[in-house]
Image (cartoon, rainbow, N blue to C red; front, side, top):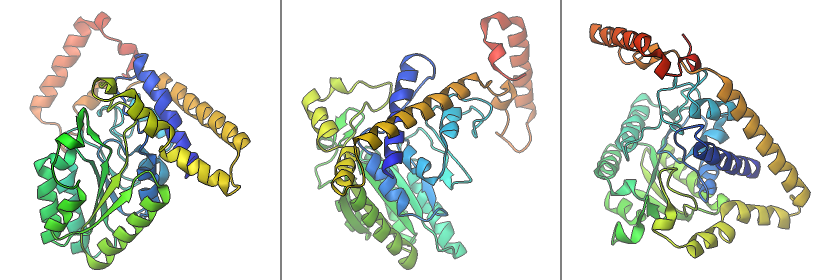
Length: 341
């Protein structure tokens, strides 16, 4: 788990720079929240269904999503599972039971309640876990999801990553109550608040939550108190709404990777040599996967119109024909050589 946390952090640094260099259009880092990913993912059954927000790359990594899978999605090439139709970091994998991420905030929450109800009706001894942030908890969809899950006794874990900020809005301006956990009791849900920077605490809390969800067919709300060290996304600049001293504290003193490394070192399971080898291995792995993904062509432009309906209606066929005519007339204006034809 430590190795994968370091790998995720390495990928974030390299891909953030990649976006800044104009090689991809968008990226979101996971700095400071790695323990919420791996601690929760390890407590789940691989067949449990995951509804993510957009900062749960570590959950996918733990489940078996490869560096090639990440890079192919971010670079939107022909090997991308989503055929290049999603923004970067909007991952999904049917094979890993990870529902494709959507940009709109909190839309996955009522969907998760419905999916969990379906599992219950089918008699599957599985659950759904739904990840969301403190900002998403301020959306109306969150309350609808909580109420549906509670009244329908749906086996869903609502996992809130309370990282202190909804983009630029601090939690002090989002709510007057005691965080997100206090809301669960009002909906009749079991609730636990946990140190989100403690890998083992997150694992134990999620394991207990899953037991309740599966054995009692009941929703559980987990609030993991963590901190977003990086920018909200590559479209954000955190220096506009918080001080460097605040970020430095969480990055250097209370960072989940640092805490876990100190623990492993104290147990005699880790040392500086192993750390250097791991960082080198991670960097080489990410860069090699990135270079491979960059060289692969983009999907055929036909894919823009495909998979919308079971069969392509006439109006889409007409639009596709118009696109072909436009590209034929203005082909020098587009990098068509990068697309499969």
